[in-house]
Image (cartoon, rainbow, N blue to C red; front, side, top):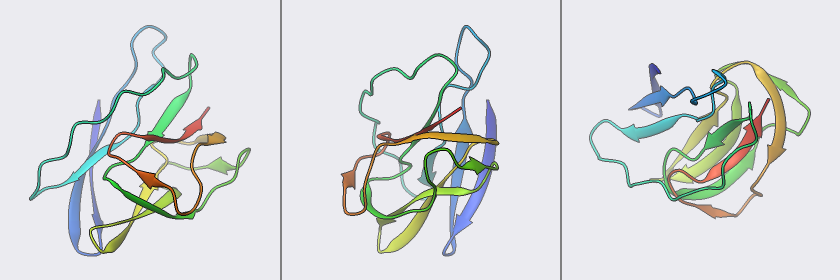
Length: 121
């Protein structure tokens, strides 16, 4: 498990990237919550394909912008989706270098904390 702290519009978020069991490849995506407020429990999602990395919503909100395209190579920290939450834009970033395998949301969709927004290989 790796932990990072990111700051968005002056609010610090703790981000944890978990590694999946079995094949050793990361299977979970960042979980982030403002340091001052507890995060809601993520809803259950369908399991990812073996070796796939899920990019999950860090907070509940509305999809403001989709920054990446399927097939695009991204680096760790590159924005995949931008959410509008708590009256600010919050980027959901790639947890590691890879290729975007799928985008599961569109601009205007409402998402909950833990919803899978995209997947990477």
